Length: 572
Image (cartoon, rainbow, N blue to C red; front, side, top):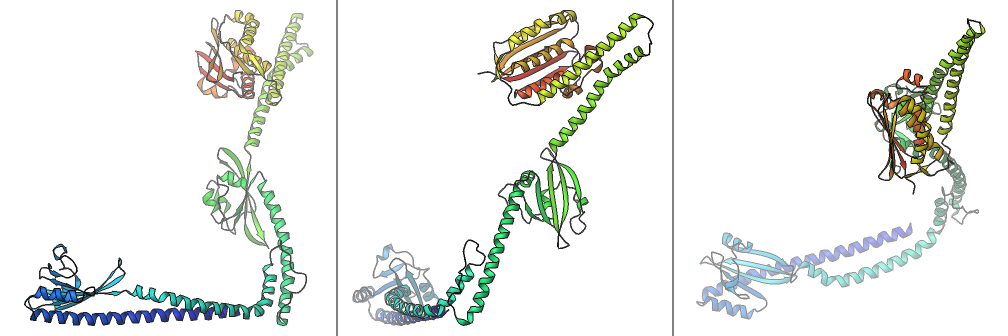
C-alpha cells in the first residue's frame, strides 16, 4: 500500500517534469518562430527598399545574397510565377512558384508568410513574401531548427533528471513499505491457498498485526473446510464424468427451456457433433429436430415420462425423456437415446423365424397326424391302403426331418464361429464331384450342365464352399425346365474369383428377387413343395458368402432363367 503511494508520487513528479519540459520547449520554439517572422518581415522591407533605389536590381540582390550567404535565401518571382532571380539555385531550372501559399497571399493581399518543415534536413523553412510596385513578388526564406530538434537537444538532460529522481523515489518506497506490508503479505499468502487442494495451509498462525489475527484465523478455518469440500466434489464429478463417458446410451441434460447443459460423447456421436465442439447453451430442439417436441412440451408442463422411437443416421433409437427436480422445483430434463437397431432387428427375425417354422412344420405334422388317425381308427379297406398311408407318413416324416436338419444347419452357420478353418480350395474339383453325383437327377429331368472352370483357387472352408456349390447347382437343376441347360463358370475379375451358375429355368419374378435369400421364402411355393424345397437353400448360401467376406449377386427374368454370381477371395 505504501509502495503504491510512493509510486504514485513518483509518477506525478515525473509527469510534471515531462510536462514542464514540453511546455517550456514549445514556448521557446514559438518565441523563435515569432522572432524569425519579425526578422523576415524586416529583411523583406529593407531589400525591397534597396531594390527601389538601385537601378541594377539583380546586381543589388546578388550583393545582398552574398553578404547573407547561408542565412537568407532571396527569390524574385514574376507575375506568372516564373523566377526572375534566385540566390541559391539556378533560376532557369526551378519550377513555377505561382502555387506557393506565401506567393498567393502576396499577390492577393500584398504580403504573405508560410512555414514548411523539411523531413530530409530536419529544419523549418520560414518564408516571407511582399508584392512590389511592378506587380512582382520578392520572397525571402530563412532556416530554423524544428520543434522536434529542440526537444532532441533537451532530451539527454531531461532523461538524466528523470532517472535520478526515479531511482531515489523507488529506493525510498521499497525501504518504507517492506516493514509495513510484511504482515499483510503473510495474510495474503494464506488467502491465496483457499480452494487449491494441491497446496497445504500453514498449521500455525502467521505473525500478523494483532488486529488482523481473528480475520486470519477465520480465513484458515474456512480455507480448510473449502479445500476438503472441493476434494469431495472433484472426486464425485470425476466419477460421474467417467460413468457418463462410458455409457453406450446418449445422455443429454437440458434446462427447463430446452437449452443444453451437458451431454456425453455417445450423444455427440449420435447427433453428429464434433467431440471438441462446445454446445452448452444451445437449443436442443434446433440441434435435434426429429423429436416430437409438441408432445414433450418443455417447461412446467414437461411430462413425467415420455418415450419415442425415431430414426437417425440409418439407426433406430428410443428416446426417453424424464424431468429433473431440484428441491421440488423443476430443474430441467434428461434425454436418453438408446440404440435399439440390433434388438429390433433380432426381434423381427425372431418373429419371422417363429412364424415361418410354425408354418413349415404345421403342414407335414398335419399330414402325419391325419394319416395316423385314419390308421388308428381303421378307416381302410385293404392291406394295401395301410402300406399307402404308411408310405405317406414316411415321406412326410422325411420331409419334416430334412426341414429340421436344414434349420439346425442354418443355425450353426449363423453362429459365425471365428475358428473356421480356411484353406486354399479348388472349386473346379468340387463342381466336378457335384455334377457327377447329380447325374441321375439331371438325366431324369433332361438337363444338360455346361462347365467352363478356370484354374483358380479361392480362400475358404472346403465344406462350406462344397455346400454353397451344391445348393446353387441343385437349385439350377431342380427349377429348370425339361431339356434345359445349366452353365457353370469360374473366372478372375480383378482381385476376386467370380463363380457363376446360370440356368434356363422358370426364373424369379422381379418383385420377389429381393427376398429369395430370406429363410423359408419361396418365390413359387407350389413348385417348391412339389420339388421338395424348404426355402433354406439360398439363405444358407448367403450366410456362407458372408462368412467368407464375399459378395453375391442375383439376376433373373421370369420364364428365361436365373443367374447367381458369387465373388470370393483368391488364394495367394
